[in-house]
Image: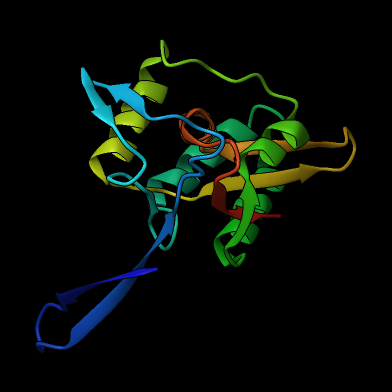
Length: 162
């Protein structure tokens, strides 16, 4: 983990925020060309925010509303907010979800791949276990998952899961 230090507004109290980093597995992924330049695994790591952002929960609510009733969706989002972070490998998340991998031709996936290459922090995924269907629902973060998987299928991804 890498610590970032900043100042809290008002009283000059120093705050330390941790950003999770996932190192790529060079044995499974070759160097990549992104935006016309070679990106080596030595110069790029996958960095993560320490918590999902508020708009990620809004996106999860919007998506989950398509499948669940409004009251159940609200309960799931409340549970996600309280849930601790855990980690799963990108390839396992795909297997459990049954979703297809989006390619780099998808603009959202490409945007997230650029973030990885430039060292920007990605937001952790929000996941729901659908026990009735025996599938994992990626409530928020599908494009980030695709971008990370394309970079390193063995990468551990921070997630909140209920």
